[in-house]
Amino acid sequence: MKKYWIPFLSGLAIAAVLYVGIKLGEARMASEIHVYQSDRAGFENKNRGGLTSSEASAKLVYIFDLLRDRYVDTLDLKNLVEDAIPTIVEELDPHSSYISREDMTAVTEQLEGSFSGVGIQFNIQQDTVMVIQVISGGPSEKVGILPGDRIVTVDDSLFVGKKINNDVVLKTLRGETGSVVKLGIRRNTAQDLLEFEVVRGEIPVNSVVAQYMEGDIGYIKIDNFGRNTYNEFFTALVNLRAHGAKGYLLDFRGNGGGYLEICIAMVNEFLSANQLIVYTEGRSQPRHDNTADGHGNFQQDPVVVLIDEWSASASEIFAGAMQDNDRALIVGRRSFGKGLVQQQFDLYDGSALRLTIARYHTPSGRCIQKPYSMGEGEDYQMDLINRYERGEFYNQDSIHFADSLVYKTLSGRTVYGGGGIMPDFFVPSDTTYVSPYYNKSISLMYSFAFQYSDRHRDIVASYKDFKSLQKYLEGQGLLNSFVNFATPKIGRPTANELKRSGAEMERLIIAYIMRQCKDENYFYQEFNSSDKTYLKGLEQLTNPITPIQNK
Image (cartoon, rainbow, N blue to C red):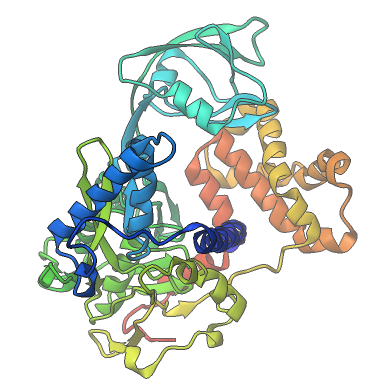
């Protein structure tokens, strides 16, 4: 997606920080670690042939006993263990991970599909929590909280100021189901503070974030593969078919994956009986084939799948299965390249180890895991940056595959392994609209859209369909209003900057207003309206897609 250059730059910054941290760590290790000769017999020569499991365990226990009993200062062994385990796991592959007890809730909420809270979407503006959307049927809607409300007190304590951030808000508003939180609300239409007692309840986390009709094509945006994603996905397919969908555009851009079994169930809707979806195989895991059962309800419908460099894991399984079986065209850019299967092992204290146990392979035999070396996470983290520097995001000719990585689809088309899914139709990342003024305006556009929504919420909400609302907002002179709003903060744009960036900035502002006053479906309709990957996908669906040609 053309606006995805922003998270890429964030990733670039993160990778740079990781690189510096690794180098500092190496320097510290070189200067501070001294050789210690064990006085316990039997350890000196064991690692020449490799330790057994019991010997390795005994060695670790012995080391921690020494630290507890002999170290010069008193140590907190619990924290020491929490710090040591991630270091050990990092020496494995890039995707095995240790999750502390404190992090488990946040890590699992999105995939498990719900959490307990008050049921709002919020944003922090000028040190105040602003309600962006109220989740339908949730606790806040039931008591009368509205979009645009400001939360200024919680349980009679002031809840504004510079100390208020996303983490603080989440920890304060979420809690056990059935517990009560008292919210003090400022509302533009009310002179006095409004008080609401909200009983926390289960709040669904939707992974199908948007669905709408574009002509006779049904569009579905899927954020991850969580516990409830198949049910959400199937419901979206059925609803779109009921509205006349003759084909489906499935958007997995930015989707980092999730549960393998959910992905398999979703692919199953499109394949014939006994067609291979994916197989997994590992040192302790014999090959296991997952095939379609033939009961899928959408086996004849045309499909196009959108992917990009942030599509990973289950997204790649879905795209690979559809591509190898010649069931769908893949449009976009080469995907991330995560072909490792993790299994979660829950530990006694509420923490967990997600351990890589196998590799997954697409039906043609491709393992799409990009190369890595054990314990060398630095190079792995830099892969997307290296792709960017080689020009892969902008030029298909910069992507090269060895002859040994050639595979064939069911009909004999050539596809490639060795790192991600290469689309059938490559769409370069679009930066034609980017200018220095655009870069400076990014955060301000959201603030402007929020303030506009706050003043015009009732008018915007009164429009009952996307096209009429789009026409209304396009006639409101939003770009000029934004420039006047932003000038005290970042100055005025040059004529060339406005010519280059103006149309895209106005579209993004309109999309933000639609999100805040309507919903995600409106947002994505506007957001996608000029997106070249989306438009290429629509183009392929409006033409016959069989036989599929590799272009």
